[in-house]
Length: 412
Image (cartoon, rainbow, N blue to C red; front, top):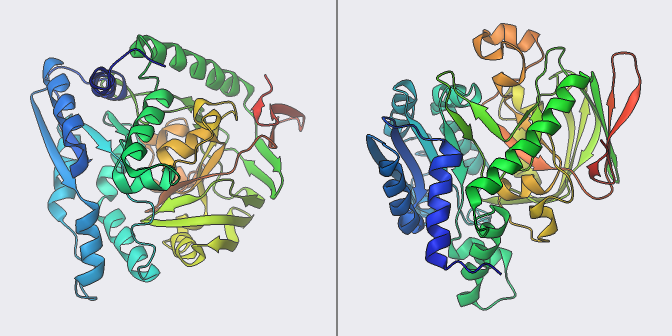
């Protein structure tokens, strides 16, 4: 157990978000997107950002209760409305060289009783309005990061067997542990972790595999890789030279699969929390890059709506490798939060690809990016496919198959 007090850990978390997550530079503006429950943490983040030289820290609040009230009571013909000022603020701060920190925490079951068509519509409207900002995010044109914190409804989902007063405490302890906050020097711990992930992605970049093959119970999937794909891990860098970590925590190395070369079936190994709905025990079947079959024991209608969002949402935009021995996997917890659960497992993402995962991608036109094998979509939704029973092989341009993972662990 750490000897640090909760207040000390919370302070460390705020400083980690600013110094390591965002890599905030003096003179930058910072926009924080956060649930109302996160106010104590946001105040510490603001103080840390100002100490780092931020010109201005502003906050864009959100609230699950307000979201649910809309679904319960708003006119059924009003769901194409969108607060355009939010999209305007995000693109403005990106264009002016600012940074964006998102604190993601929501009730995994918030919208489980709502009309799947309305849930899909709200997702699509929001994604459409945020296209200009998302393009900058997917090209690393600004320093951005995502963290999380417990809220009561989420903590109750993760720890249903504990008394209510212990649920948030336990979720805080879990988050501090997997984010390395309870270590004596979290910044140094993260620097060492980044170096280890960088060594993994450097190895994969040197190999230049043409294809990845995933084999596990319920999964037999091959993913072709674009000729000039690039593996990334942990850190990213903006054109201005700002180094940041987009996801805290992160345990992955990732790249983009070729949008037309996914074939076979892949099964989920953890539930997917999407748009306030849990999708469980699902599988997707691919042929020549496209989803041709969707099955799910729970949330199938929402999953089908996601795949039907647009042309690109029926294809893959990301493939990521995470060892089964990652701290999040070893915690034994199901977080019902993609930020954490994706870092417990190999995963793929439906939809939009990161432009920086192909050489020259950020400067390409949409047509050039597609020709290079990159996928575009309003959606980008990660889901988990890895386990202790998964093998991953890389196939070279000569057709030689080499082990990348065996039984969920690195094989090199």
